[in-house]
Amino acid sequence: MKRAVAALFGLLTLLFIGYLFHVSQEIERQSTLDEARPADVIVVLGAAQYRGRPSPVLQARLNHALLLYLRGLAPYMLTTGGSGGDPVFTESEVGRAYLAKRGVPSERIITEEGATTAQSLESAAETMHRMNLHSSIVVSDGYHIYRVKRLLESRGIRVYGSPRPEAGQRSAMQLRWLYFRQSIGFVLWQIGINI
Image 1 (cartoon, helix red, strand yellow):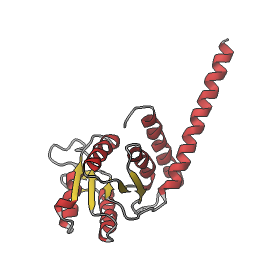
Image 2 (cartoon, helix red, strand yellow):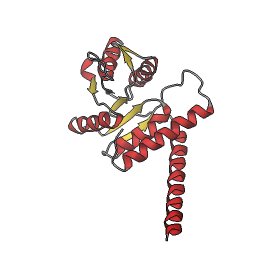
Image 3 (spheres, rainbow, N blue to C red):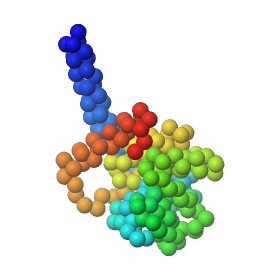
Image 4 (cartoon, rainbow, N blue to C red):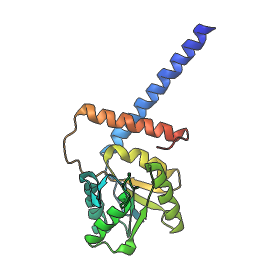
């Protein structure tokens, strides 16, 4: 009996690891696809900010989203992200200020805060439904797009991914780790644990 239980546990473990690697491959495939096309809103995922100034990663995401906006692909922009421990600034408000300084009318910029990606996107989806916005272009780092798309799609939003251009070169090992880490986050979300 113990052998049967151990064999079953081993099989389930192998299946789970295999599923994580499958999701990692899907994340990798999605990470380089630019699906940008006309939509109702451009959603910019937050990243670190430093006392009111966007980090290089957040700035790259905002710049990419701004180019999409200037191309006329969406009439609204939505910035996300919480405080990350900052008592004054949030990533979403820093994003709003950055875009407004570059000519985006403030009434065209929506902000949503959340401590995690899932919380930010939950709020974003609710706001989009309230505003009758049904489609979005999601801007983030490539490795992040797959999970973000699935989170918004689960709330009935049509989503197109548009990863920001990579600034530096990451090694193949670093990329594999990012894909695998995102696959864990995705699987945790699937079983009801939001990170």
